[in-house]
Image 1: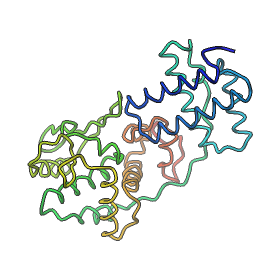
Image 2: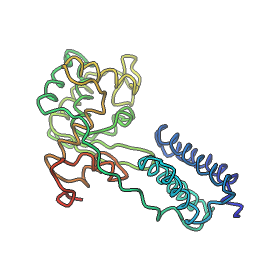
Image 3: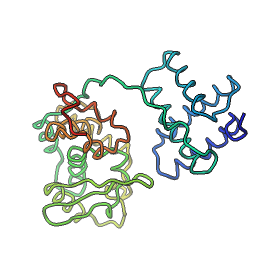
Length: 289
């Protein structure tokens, strides 16, 4: 049994990996998922008196999960966590190769498309904020960003003023940063106009793009509260920012049929996640990948 990849050693390396993920800006949900999946792997290694030193052992583990009735989505999440972990071990020189890289995810039958709003419903939602002050403009800008870019709530919270560039009076772009990774999203003229009005109305020096009434960076909780408030006011399903992200994705696919570009827009690492937005009457072979 390899001293570097026995269960005890892997547990110690797991903690280092989780700290690395924290430093890379991974979400707390992702880190908790990694922690649980890797701990389950270590428990299995101890039980079987094995070490995680070759791909056969790892493949056997996932086969046993499948025989044990675990859902494909659960197994795929564990595979993703293991690949990321061994990728880290390889970069640290603990293992010579990422032996989990060749483990393939289980193909999952595409789920029913998520609930989304129609074009008129989005227009109704955007008419709800009172534009008489800074925070009304802020709220409109937030609703527009969600519905026009598909940005995640946590990503929106983390935006700074410097992450938005106004290229002209007609267009702009926004950079989403997540650890060492980033992606750039385009902003249309109306979005830029509202953002410029909002920023011009502010008198604070906070670097955050969106602030609370206390002149500090707005929280994810506040974002969810205000989105639900306007959804309820508009008589629409109260499902938080996710329904606006889903709406953007569904409308994007209707317009472009470009799954690969949508994957980039949404920041998905795995295109399987993006496939849920494919129109039901469209075969995957007809979609741009």
